[in-house]
Image 1 (cartoon, rainbow, N blue to C red):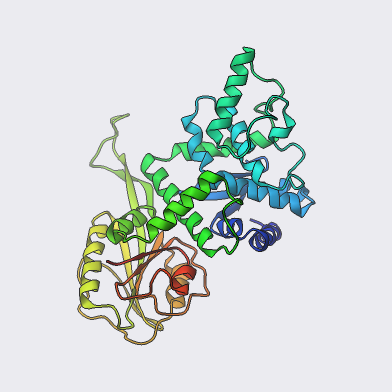
Image 2 (image 1 turned 180 degrees about the vertical axis):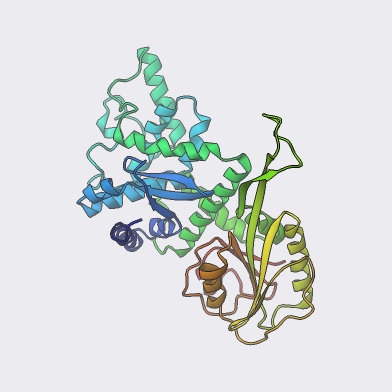
Length: 394
């Protein structure tokens, strides 16, 4: 992404953060990329992560900041409501695309929407439909109108409409495996909950009803005791990468020749161990037992022992460390810097009591904070401000 466009998109993101904190925080959790293959702005999947795709020429031609704001919020609403995931559930994808835009555009200032935005007010047969409904409601209503007239409503936008073409990149959501799809959905849900936790504005009324209820349910569920081992294993699964390996042991089934190929999976995990002295030996032993399970899944695990600074780093080989070096204060920045600039993992796990200053370095990779039993509590300010997902060891 060019620095000029990146700076401009970041500026609009800050505007979102100031005016609509929930959407601003959600935007900050997204990967971003410029690509001429998309017509304008869309949401897709890159390396198993939801990504905002921006056509640089299209963006440069947008002169009004309010319109840029509307385009970004439009995509964020689609993602938050999981429209890219749900599209495959509906037979008529084109009608689903129309219905999805009818939903999200109701939550954007109509003065900021582009002229060709798809809204209920523009179509005579849809004007009287109730507002605030979900995509399934509008999908069914459009089908009913078509069935009543025994033909499609020609006043509705066709598949070549610029707004509809933004949904073409949603095909990437259908191409990932069901397991990976669920992992991506979990990432999105975590981002939504974190955005809600960090927002000071009143969410009720500013969000679609179904989205508000889902967030509230997640927030209430988060107050209950969670199975940290399950959370840990699910999180590690999001860091799994696939690659092709040639082998002379397995002939190609298609051509009967050697070498054949095998589909392998690779995980590169950085595990930070807080050695400031407040985590019990029993907790460390239990944690390392889980690491052995993860190691068996063909994972490369780098252990980094850190208190106020990194004491040592070594590859985990299924053995418990004979000693833990450290016992000073706590600083989370050195580990995140090491991950960002040197090790470049697929995911970071930070096992800590959480008693330390919130890091001022943003992790470039998904991060899970495993908080020890006597560590910080969910209502603490540090818990709320730590980037990524948090789970307490029980």
